[in-house]
Length: 182
Ligand SMILES: Cc1ncc(COP(=O)(O)O)c(C=O)c1O
Image (cartoon, rainbow, N blue to C red; front, side, top):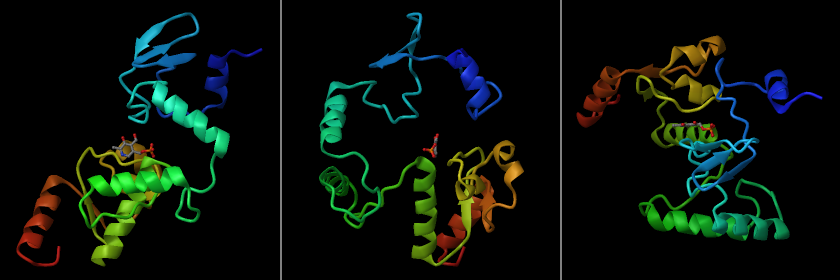
């Protein structure tokens, strides 16, 4: 029988040629634990998803309670789901008044896609500028506005009308401040 490590190498798409490859059996608070009791401090926290610490009792209870009612129905605004609408109310209460509506998606990349679409629709403009060394995710539009060539070169052509560098951003900002179209 193959080990988990062998299965990982055989069947899992890896994000880089040098994945961390820590085998984790349990996580608690800031710690990760390996199968032989190895203990690691987790400085990644599920890329901020587990930012209350692993298996926080309140989070575990909320998940268990929810599982007893229903699991996934739909992320988009179709059905009235109590946890979702209460979350929108909470978010709206801490955001500026004009930002009172939430569009839920499944990942950071999709949130970036939503932000790009919102900006294009609201401004009626298509040009998107981004910072050198920025990272916004792995979908096509998110990759189009990421600073590193290494990750996106194999996927061209990407989204048109995008531009990088601080000087581009400054030029556009100055034009906007002067009231001219950027
Ligand atoms: C700054 C930033 N933006 C966007 C993303 C993309 O998020 P996701 O991996 O959930 O698509 C990440 C993921 O690491 C990120 O760090």
